[in-house]
Image 1: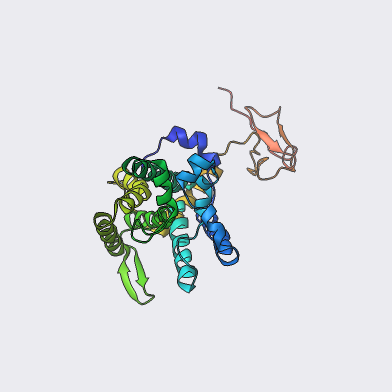
Image 2: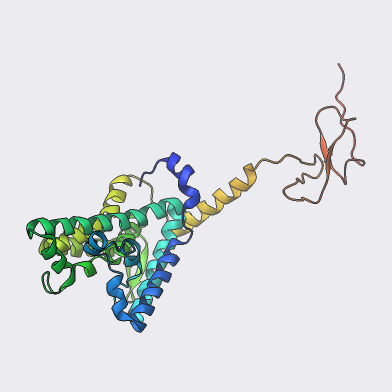
Length: 296
């Protein structure tokens, strides 16, 4: 996945740490609405008709908290599974690039919703009929069009990206059967292709838009070396240590090597009797042996 280094330097500080956990918290809020006030969810869906004609711009963001499924024990397992995948990808790619991947999937999904709304408005000849399509059920296989646009396929893009990054990692399917994750990726990919070609125009747009970030990632990451999660963690720790090592210091004792970074309580002074620029901490400024260069 290619991103400009300049963009990362400029906008990397705005990246959200542990984005996978943030998404799960959003789902938690959505499930609370689902249990306590389920009719409230209809005001949260990504519905372009309500956004354009009724000014409900909050829907551009609130659809992210709408749960992609009902809540049960399987939901908890899946949330934990996607959290593990997401945090591993964030460690491997870096926080900025993982943010770009997720939010590009969100943006493509929003664009897909408006594209489908434009399609319904044009081919149904009026915005009023298009509005009906976004409110009523039954026009596209029993689903409200607005309800089709959820984070389900965005989550799927996380799984596919993980399978592409770590194709040889083994997972326990049904907690029993060891299988390489690339096999599961191929199976899921085949199912998505089947759904795409056998679904309605609405389903085609939903799938294509939500997975566009993975398509961009797959094209941009061909030929890159894949790493195991352990290697990714070691690389991240190495980068942190290098950053600590190369951090410049203004003062350093020539005897003990302590600096104002490691020991901010110490005072440092240059010795006027030493040949050259030798600096010492307060414990060695008066006890060191003066450095003298031999005169030829």
